[in-house]
Structure formats: C-alpha cells, structure tokens
Image (cartoon, rainbow, N blue to C red; front, side, top):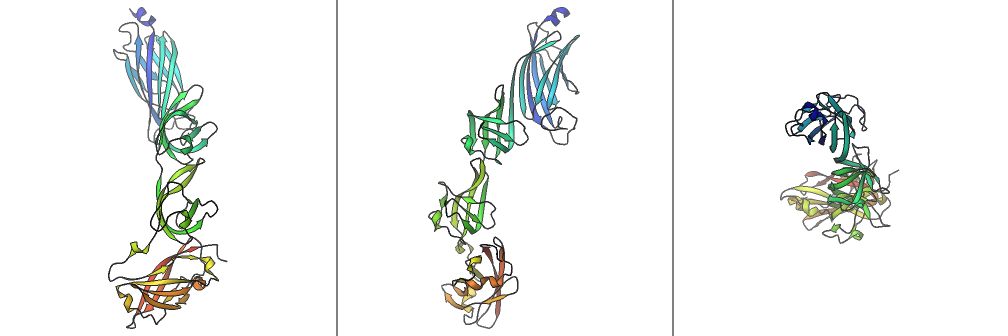
Length: 402
C-alpha cells in the first residue's frame, strides 16, 4: 500500500494571504525587494489542500516554509494552514515519508494573496498555475500617463490602471489621480503587464479657509490666495458663490472671505478647489448687548496705501457707543508704540466711526510683512472723561516694505 500511495500524483491548491505585522517584528535578512531587514515585517497566512486520485493518500503530508519554524500537516481531506510566512522569495516544501519536494514563490509582497496549483509526485513538484492578487493602500508617489500607471508608497512596482479598472469614491477616471492622493484598491499580477488594478478608491481631502484675499489671478480668473491658507484657491464650474458674491469677478484684494473646498487633481498635480466662497461679514461677529469693542475696516491693509489719498475707519460698537466723545480723537497704537490720531469721528447707526488717512496707516508698523497679522490698540475718551482701551487685528497685504 505504501508504494501505491507514493506513486500517486498529488495536486496542491495553495492560497497565500499576506497580512501586515507591526514594525517591531524580527529583522532577518531576505531577498525582499522593498528594502533590507524587512522579511518579517509582514506575515503570510498559507491555506491549501493536497488532492490525489488515490483515496486516503492526502492525510499526513508535511507542508512547511523552508528556513522558518512554520509547518503544518494535512488532515484527512488534505487541508492545511500555515501562518507567519515572511515576504520576499520563499520556498514551500512538501514531504511524506521518503518523498520530498519543493517550489519557490518569488517576491511575496505585503497584502498579497497567491493561489498556486502544483503536482507533487515522488520528489518532483510541478507548478501548473499561479494567480496573484494584492491590496494596496497609501499615497501616490509617481504617475506615468504614458503607461497609465501609478506607484503607491510602500511599493516598488507600478500599478497599471486599465479601462476595466473599477473606480470608487471621488475618482472616476485616471485623470482624476494626482501625486499625494491617498488611495486604496486591489490588483492582480498579469504576466505581460505586471500589476494591474482591478479596483481603486479615493476620497478627496476637504479643508476650510478664512482670511483676507492677498492676490487674484486677473489673467485667467482661475485662482486667488488668502492670508493664512498655504495653497492657491482655484475655482471651477462647481464653485458656489454665496451672499454678495455672484462670481469670481466680484472678488477683490483685501476682501475678507471664507469658504471650503477639496484637494483634486489637475494634470496629475494636486490643487485646492473651492466648493463655496462667501464674504466674511461683521454680522456674524455682532457682540452681545453691553459689550464694547472696536472694529477696523477694512481689516486688510495694503502696503500700496503709502501715498494714497483714501481713508480707512474704526467703528466703536456696543451698548456704550453713545457715550464716546466724538470731539476727542480716537488714537491708534501699533506694535512699535507709534500712534495715529483720527481725522474725524461721528455717530453713525449703532456705532461711532472714526476716519484715518490710508497713507499714514503704516506709521504704526515698523516692519510690516505681507501675509502677517498685527494687533492694533484703539483708545478714546467717553463723555465722562473716562479713557477706554480696545484692540483689533489687521492683515497686511502687498509687496514687501523697504
């Protein structure tokens, strides 16, 4: 019976599922192509079944990964399971009695699932077929439009995006991808194309902005920049203008705006596109009854004001506005200690408004830097002779001051 048993041909169906382990795992050397000392930074769960035309001959076959302590013995149905196989080139060994054989699975990668069919006869192992699948997740580091492929962080081989690739989330076509986009998906290993994505998914990152407009693209009317927000803010047909804004043409340098948007791709590079833009109004900052405060308007000062004949104003608001002595000057003080007196002041609506010359505004700031904000102190006198002290913040725009 033993001779008959060992002359039978065995068919092993192996499913290799690569599972990530923590970075603190052992760092033995291997042929892993991702980098050195990485063979045990991921583990493989190997499940399979040995089939045979000889009844009862599939029980008790030893299956192991050479060079490791990983071993399993098939049950009566020929089933076995191995856990903890490392990445890289790995040798899978089969043994029963005096008969031994092995096969090599090359370049096992993280998150990879491998299915192979082999014939195990005497000491010979013949691979009949092999299918390889893997999941990927990470930021795109390289895009190659010529081959319609991407490279994702943590991988070394490009992943081809085909017309059959299923897109999910915010991306619909290859052109929606861009360097820096976080993606995840599934891929298969094709003999003639390398790795090919069967599914890819991404969600655009959202962000909010709020601040004074620093620059406007007046040539193409396609973007503007805002103080405190690092990236240019692009607009497209999906941008919604709210409130007093009806379109891009309504935007002006110095306006205080707010909005929200998403990072999308343009010619495979990352851009921030506004989905909503509106003016930031003081109505949202109205104080409760009894408060007393000052609001500088506009709160964005342009260095080009030097030499201007225009004016800016300070509004004193709150329940006590009627007690402000408009015959006494309102005085502004900057970070250098320099002061500036109002040209005039009057009650208007529910506040007192004091006027100042634009050309004198920057006497309050010795070293004004575009894009920075500064606190201005506002002092004045009440009708009873009491002095009040308030503060407000302004943004600086324009070319660097000499």
